[in-house]
Length: 191
Image 1: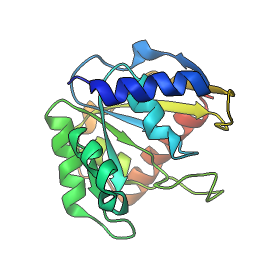
Image 2: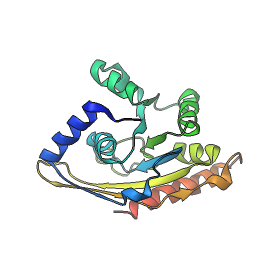
Image 3: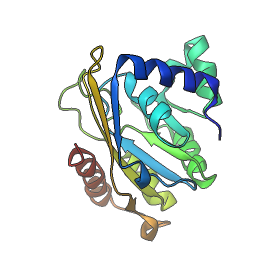
Image 4: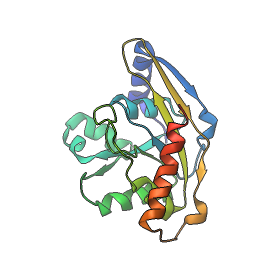
C-alpha cells in the first residue's frame, strides 16, 4: 500500500526538525502479515514509524483520536484499528487479527500509553494474545528520543520473533504474561 503524499510531506518536515537514524530496516518483512511492537514515549512515535519504516503500518489507536476530524480521516486511510481503552474490546481484537490475516503490518504499543506520561507503565497482554491467535511474527522496535528540536531520534528495528508454532493454541494467562514479557524485553534490549 502506498504511503501517500501526506506521509511524504510529514516525513520531509520531520527530517528538517530531527536528526533521524533508522537501524535494522531489513528486519521488517517487505510483505505479509506481521506485528510491529514498540515502546511509546511521545505522540510523535506512530508518526515517526509510519513515515520512516519501509512499509505501511496499520496502528492500533485509542478511540478518542477518532473524534478529531482531520486526523480521523488520515488514520482511517491507513486502516487504523480504534480501540476502547479500559475494557476488553473484542471488536478491536478481531480487527487486529483480520489486519494480520490480510497481510498488513499491525503496529502496537504494548503499554497502551506513553511511558513518559505514565512512568512504570507495564505492557499489557493484547499484543501477545494477537500474536498467539494469528501465529504471526512480532518485530520489536525501540525508539530512543526526547523529540527536542534538532535532537537525534534513533529507531532500532530488532530481529523478528516467530510465533507461528502457537497459532490456534489456547494459552493460559501465565503463558500470555511470559510472552508479553518476552516481547517487551526484546524492545527494551534493542535500545
